[in-house]
Image (cartoon, rainbow, N blue to C red; front, side):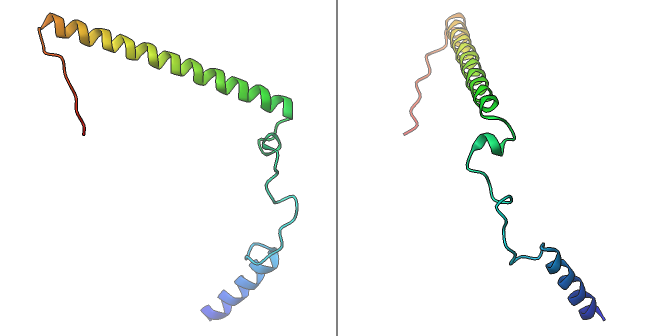
Length: 91
């Protein structure tokens, strides 16, 4: 009984085109244009890429600023508590 149900269901799934071995239509394949893949026009995609680059530059600048602030704070605390400079060797 289970075999009969399994074979009937697998045959119906194959008939729907979901069961592997099917032909791919041109619409199903990924488009070569990244703008079309993202569902945008070429101009929208270029504007989006510019925004992404600008945001990355802003994040990098903020990270560098915070890194510099931390370095200044470390130097200040080392001087205040007369701690030796840390020399690091990871070889």
